[in-house]
Image: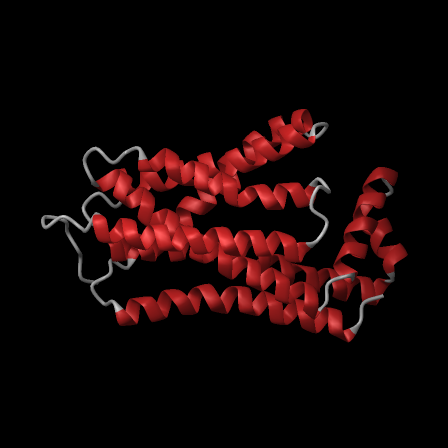
Length: 269
């Protein structure tokens, strides 16, 4: 059922989703040796705890409620990601990073946050899909579905649909997925800088809800695609790219207008 192209595309995509974030973290640290090394791991941990654990717990309750309405689904999906991830960042800055405030550390935190997302959502997923491919090719799809579903008809249909979705993955799909992850990483770096300014500078806490709103707006095109309002991935990526470009410019301006305070610590590691 699976072709050599399917397997190669997933292998290349999965590896790139691991290599790009790790490479970005290594290169940034080498070029900015004063950056506090734990920042990148704090960013990664923040994403895992707030997006992959806490947010998913809320999804288990809310998604059955909002799935029947396109408007509710889009609003909830976008806001949930923004609220959980930006709140996680804000809490991390106010606690774990309170003695290590600097824009460079914020950038490094963003690389960790966006990198962890890329590794978990794309890298690990694609590499695990390869194990599914190996099993299906060895057993045949009918036997694989039978074993995986343990004879449950509803589960069998779900498994079969998932296998069919995996079979559609080729290099074109992987190029789109890698591009989306790179754009998302750039956006996460910007959000990390914005929330850092909210946490570190007196009277600028309003930047935190701004980050929540910006994050929510970025996720709207994806939610519209999932509900069928937008029908093409290029349109989704075009909107995401244009929006992220505007956010990048705004973040650079903000960082220049709100420089690091002279008393802020920059640990050498």
